[in-house]
Amino acid sequence: MGEKTERAYCRTCEAPVLATKQKPAHVLHLLLTLVTLGVWLIVWIVLTLIASMKSYRCPTCGDRTVPYTRKLRKEFEARGRTREARF
Ligand SMILES: [Zn+2]
Image (cartoon, helix red, strand yellow):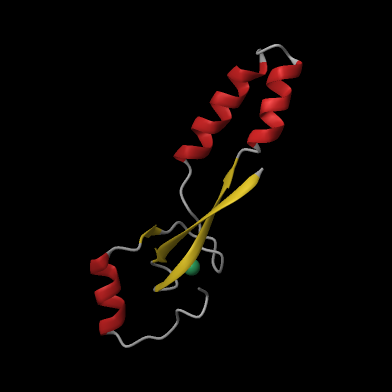
């Protein structure tokens, strides 16, 4: 399993964070697909679909994050917070 990161907003921490989510180890799955003459491709596809449905998590509290939209950025800046140190 690898890890994907994305800039997102954590409603629990009330701050923008660099959120993470797990992604399949595609190189390993490619090798397994070749070794099993394509049979492993089914497992690879299922795991990739499951991983794509999972949401990004806050690295601080572990809660789900939401996309860091322009609206959220304005709200955050309006509160005068400067907790963007995690970037
Ligand atoms: Zn958080």
